[in-house]
Length: 217
Image (cartoon, rainbow, N blue to C red):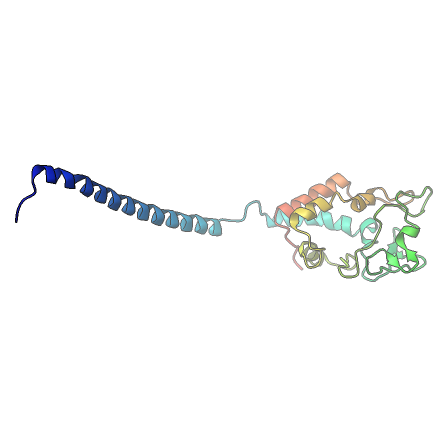
């Protein structure tokens, strides 16, 4: 077989170099892809096996004990009755005149909550407290506090199907809702919740951020 001349040999070298370089690039790409996939699997596995961040069942349950005291006080529970008639007074008796919840939680027929509960508190002792958004939870999402054990109430509060489709972030914000704040400005002659709003917010935040654990039944 006739051997290539020196000039022909040189002409083949760039081709061999290009082919070799292509093979190396292909091998490098395959290795990089394999390494990347493996790394992602390891990272995913590590995240799966890692303990949830900032979860503490003991501290969460302890914080809910304070939350529960506030939610079961008349200032909160009176608007979260087990029936469709709101409660009234520090003894949480059935509301005088027997107003009903209604579909939207704002009263029934001509007896609307806003007829008596004005945007601000009415002056005088034991007169109707006010708020621009005064209402009970709607009929489709009653959010009952009355009669609930700590376990039942904690489970209910964190369940989107029972809490108005609220996420944990929205629950944190709800502590500053105008109607919630109204519990600490109930008008003359009414007791305040057992904690200040700042103390309640701290306990509420701790309960949720530490995992929103429910006390044992």
